[in-house]
Each structure stands twice: as structure tokens, then as C-alpha cells.
Image 1 (tube, rainbow, N blue to C red):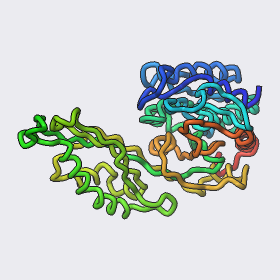
Image 2 (cartoon, rainbow, N blue to C red):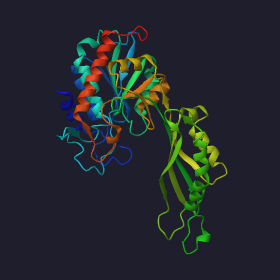
Image 3 (tube, helix red, strand yellow):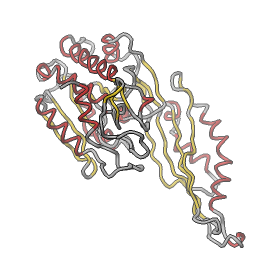
Image 4 (cartoon, one colour):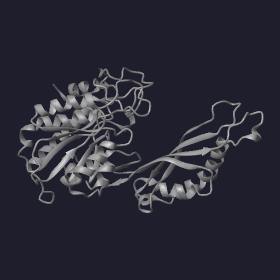
Length: 380
């Protein structure tokens, strides 16, 4: 077996997040968690499956006991986005043109396979290593990150550092924006459209509110900047309301996405700012989920160790969010790192270059050897 063949097996096990139009009935992380549990036990790991949502576990694999030694983790997520609209077989794992194709091949089963293969190549050293390296597969990253939130709450004190598997072209994503997803709702009174004056048009209330607050909110967000991430932003992504053109709508909703920098978080967060901007408008916030930004210092000792292994690796920022933000918020300094390009993530013909996958597996293997055989005193 090779890292490529392992990735083929992972792609052929559907693990589609059931939220947000999965496009298939083959959803959930249980099947891939069971496969990986058996695979990791064969390497000598002590594996636990912790159910975070019904039938949707986190996987925790420890090669060394929790005995106080320094400890880090490899932490990719087990789920993928939906497969609706894909132009290739999402679960084929086909190899052609130097690429491996299928849902998750880039995001993030490719990084997962690279990490796992590196662990396999060094399995004989992991139990007695001076630095313990665990593998944690998180459920639910592509929706609300319940897996990493739960893990951070329970186990943050055990870890010095986390490497979250994402397709970063082997660069170190050490800072990311957070995100507020919020649903705004306006209500009114239904009436026949031939007598609109007898109703109260919820869609127009929502439209007027969005028009009124959008530019001022954009301007306020632009004041919360970051030298790598740029400014905080807003997108109105979904609008819905009404049922027929001849009925005055009594309900309308908008779903928005505010990407927040650490400066906005430190100033009270995006939700507080949104509430301030909506004051006096006939719109309420009915759902809100704010995910934190992340910033691990680029001179962190573990980041330096990674860069020593591969000098071409750069420290970069990203506007997207990941499990790393929740681990960092819980107290584990975290980064995102893995082979493959984010440009292929979530696409209709997702793939990873096989050469990139192999380079990633070699990189993680060299890193493990460095961390095990020559740990720096500043880290230990």
C-alpha cells in the first residue's frame, strides 16, 4: 500500500456532512471513523470513538499514554461537503492525469492520508518518543465544528500544539478570520396582492433594512483590520420570503456572513456590532453562530520546527475558518497545514495532485522524525 492507495480508500468511503444539502443519503462520519479506527489500531494506537452527535463521532488515537510528556496532535476533519452538482463520480478515487479525483481528495482526505502515512512510517518509534503525537479526526467541520469545540473543551490542557489538516500547499496558515453566520428575520401581515395596503410586507421591511445598514456596516467593518488578513467583511448570501406573487409576504429572512479579524473580536465581536447596527429597524436576529478568528505567532517554536523541516514552507493567513480556530480558542496553539490546494476544495471536480500528496506524506514523516529524535529543549 502507498499513501495514494490509502487516499483512494478514504475517498471511496462517503463521509458527507448531512447539513446544508448533502446531495446524497451517504452521510455522516461513522463509516470512515470505523475504518480509521481499525487502521490505526493495526499501527499500535489506542483508539477511542467519542460520539458528538448521534452516529457522528470524533476519533482519538494515542500511540503513547497520557503520562505528562510533551504532546501535539495531527487533526484533520472526517467530513466533506456535499456532492450535489459534481461532474465526476464523487466516490471513485479515480487516478488519471497525475491526479486523484473525488470528494474530499483535497479537502481534507488528502492531508489526512499524508498524516496517516507519516504515522505509519514512524509507528515503531511513537510509543517511546520524547514528544507524543496523537491523531484526532474531527466530525462536523464543514458545518458548526462541533467536534473540535468538544475536543478543545475536554482535552486542551493535554496539548502544546495542533496541526490541523487542510489543503494549504504545505504552507503554514497561522492566522485566519472568524465568521459570524446570522439569520435576520422580518415579519408582517399577509394579504391579497390586489389590496396590498391591507397587509404588511415583510420582504420590503427586510429589503429596506438591508439597504439602510449595508454601507454603514461595511464602513465599520473596514476599520477592524489585520496586517495579514486585511479587513473584516460582510456578505448577504441568502434571501427568502413570500410564497406567491399575489400574496403580500408575512415573513422574510436573510442569511449573512461576517468575516471578522482579531481586532473585531477584541472589540466585542461581530454579533455585538450587528445588533448595534440593527437597533431601531424592524428586523430581528433569530439564529447566530460566531466562530473565532485564530492567530498563532509566526515565531512559535513548533512553527519554527516545521519550517526547519521544509524551508520553502511560508507562514500565511487565510480568510476561511477551520477547526484550528476552536482548538486555539480553547488554549491549544494551532495552525492549518497539508498538501493540496484550497482552490480545489468544494469544487465540482475535486482532485489532488499525486505528487503533492506524496510530498506532503514525506514532509509529515520528516517532521515526526525531527520531533521524536531531536526535540528542542525550548519545546520539551
